[in-house]
Image (cartoon, rainbow, N blue to C red; front, side, top):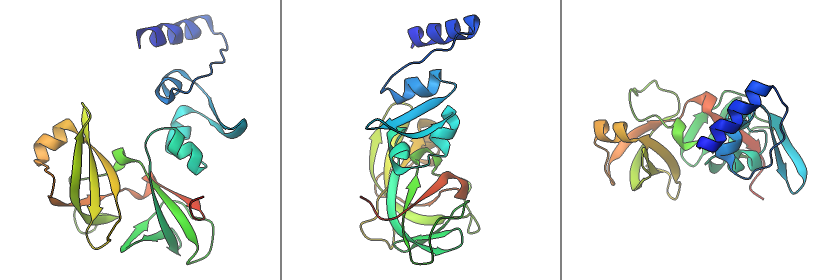
Length: 189
């Protein structure tokens, strides 16, 4: 990390254009002004690190940069996707007509487990399955009630784990903000 910081500082002080090739996503996000994501020699997306991470244009980019949960669903209406027994509101219109198959992508760190009420968009009840301690956060395996076989990852900061007293087997309300969800056309390949 120290070397990465020194290289970034040197780039900025000298004002030199640098092309860096890496498979380390964290390094690319931390050092780059622009990122080019390639898949078998084909450019999938070019953009600022925040754009690549927050608004991936393809499932490959979404999964390659960071952790992503993909859920198979169908379009239920404008800005609506149904996955199992849950209907999600999304921020952008998805391609296709009602009933078309889609893949809904969720980043685990966007899960909300606090401050939810009945009016919170995309709120559902989930059983907390396995909790994996990963240092500054725990990755929770969420199993939405009423949607057998559906599994969603949620990253819960260590302080929230303590404050909420989360434990495996608990059933808790969970929500994913509409602007944090990405919808990709079609079924998985």
